[in-house]
Image 1: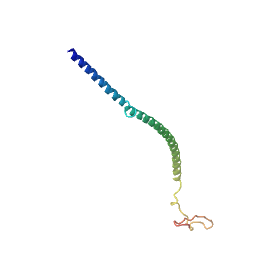
Image 2: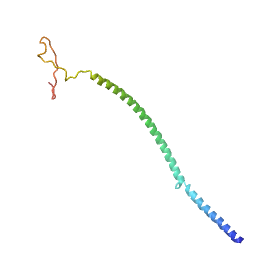
Image 3: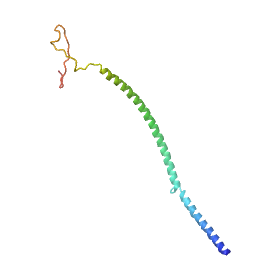
Image 4: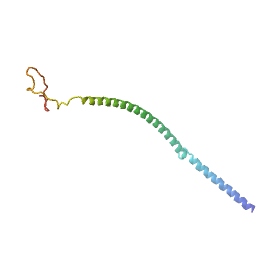
Length: 125
């Protein structure tokens, strides 16, 4: 009976040894830098570094664009204020179509009046 127990014990030890050998080979392939997860981790690390550099460049570009847009917005607001003032001052001017045009019969013959002739649409008058 002891002999059977010893044989089973040796068989179990050999099985455990073989199992450890297989696991060691799998772990070596798993950590391989070219094909395994180690290679994938190395590639991902390089990609993270590239993305960090790209993100830094994008942030600096965004800051420059924001500064430029802030300046342009300020200029646009100043121009809008001036345009509002110009439009408001145009309301004070009389409408040229409603202004009466003096006729020669209304004018005093003793005074000389200079009057600008309107040009026709096709050219000079």
